[in-house]
Image (cartoon, rainbow, N blue to C red):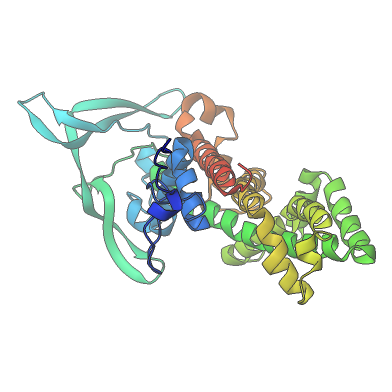
Length: 387
């Protein structure tokens, strides 16, 4: 009896790949291990819609922080004494009061003085429209302190008029512009602080777990000492050590370093635990190279997913720490503009009851922390080799 024809072998039917071709994991000829690791990580990451959305928002925040002068409708110090605590102006897109007019505009205010409290009382004046446009001229500035310009991404079409899309503070300064400028300071402190604490955590945690003995005991006692001190008193003590006569740049650098010296302990403990379990593995004991090369080339790549997740999840901690310090008056101080400094304006009942838009920097902090957590979770799941 004749045997049935066998189906062609999968390996035989696969076409040879050229040296420069990256196979598509979804094609019939590709095996799961054909694509490079970075391609597999990207494909897993883009399936997580929440993480992708968070990454897009994070990119937008980073662009805003880089081009703050251009994105902001005005400069952070520009003020109008007649617009103190001005409420947000609603942005309109279509005007149907006189025909059909397509364009951006806001209604102007009518300002009256309360005879009892002497506070400004604002009502919307629908008879007076302020056109709003993109790439308009406004307050002059220097982009990155180098390039002079007066072009703003959005603002009043007439340079002599002002718009307050997110309201104004007690000095009549535009809140939208100040929040945009605060994005640069708060995000950069988070990224710079994490970079320094990340290096400290990897180096000290790696040496502690790989070498063991007295080195391990010494580093762990330092970590336990730092972790045993309550956070707020520790921040207060370190902030008190910063001289008050220092300028804004020196204070910024000092706060970044102080936050880094506090935030490396958790990562160091995790790295130490992983190194203790990995240093007796065959691929580590068989390595014929120095300690630094073994740690960097063989041990760290084995838990890359956790390192990436720790890196992305540590940035929200730094942002919250800076915000808390500045809110308590222990961190950055005016004229520096950060989210924490802006929240100092909302430390009274008047702001909460009559000017709730002063709490909008807190919403910016919440958005930044959420998107960083979403991206961190997505990258961790995508880079996990056991998933």
